[in-house]
Image (tube, rainbow, N blue to C red; front, top):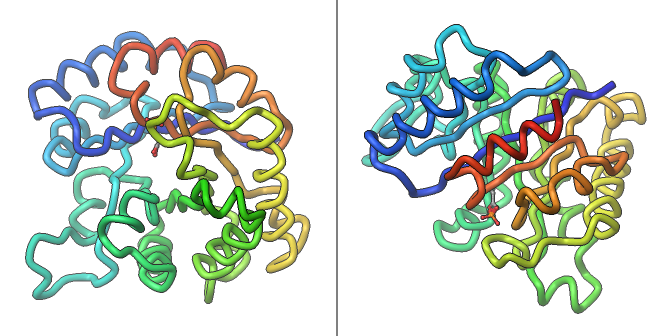
Length: 252
Ligand code: 13P
């Protein structure tokens, strides 16, 4: 059985003191009740990683970052390296989020370099893929996502591929309150698994965790996460409040 992941992507929200309050609440409500079939990960902004690492020490809630630079160090003003993240207890790193692809020119090539750097350092990349509304309406959505997956996994061997987490996040569902239906989400997660099986082999594709993200909330999370190819959720807005705890509790 594949592990289920519930990952909170806080984006550019919460000051350090606000983050401290929320992490403390997550810890109090969740850390005693999680089992090995479910992995909860929180991805606060860089500025709260150190605090979150101290608070979550000795709990089964893990820490993720929202981005990383692909170079190990150097003259990249304003950027953060993987060793800096590792040093703060970060174990997961989101890559290729559609907001970064759209607003910060994160290309497939850049996504691939980041995935390589993350895997080289034994962290888990959470690779985001997904089509825009226009691409869906033109019937190009599978083609778009296939290319994103193939490019992100370029030069990644099959062992490393198994430790990747993929998040299917249709751009039109992010922050809109208009989630994909369970059928749409399942169709795409199944398709992504198929694409991975074509790059490697079926056994590899069966081991990769594929999540859905886009307007996940307490009312739709249970149905979405019960689909056979959906191994959890990447949650934005609802991860900024106690609703995140309620969503996790539906899975334990
Ligand atoms: P929302 O849950 O706010 O739609 O955001 C999804 C997302 O982008 C998670 O990475």
